[in-house]
Image (cartoon, rainbow, N blue to C red; front, side, top):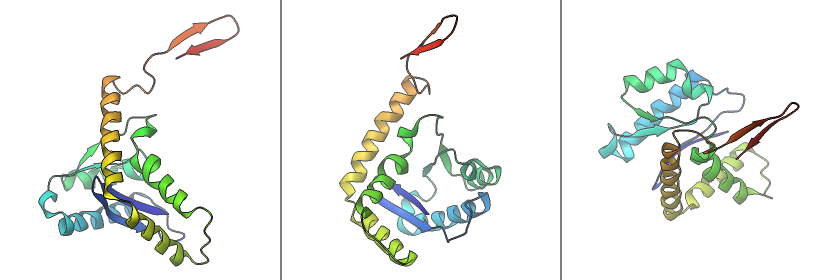
Length: 166
């Protein structure tokens, strides 16, 4: 499994989860600690002024993680429920990597990790810039519809069925 953090300029930090390891709150806090150190090294200008957007996975929303982020003054952007188009790794990064690796066989985990790293490094900065511009548009739309995934819907009840129209 790959955990990857990126911004509009490219990948900032990535980690491969060791085989058999569970990504729980304890593990995720360790990852976030390494991420913060990486940001301090590669982006010192923003070390105390960056925001994290992650989905609503239980390891991301656990009290221990929320507490860690608050202690280190890391602002988070909320992930509205039913808004998969706002999860950049899910609709941009992971499908792209999967597509690049399709049809290739790697006998060893290390070989697969090297291939994934090569593919991550080959994504042009322009692709990250474009996806962030689209992401901002999606976020604005989410704000405009007050977090509702469906803008308009109409319920129609009959004696046997419930119809929902969008």
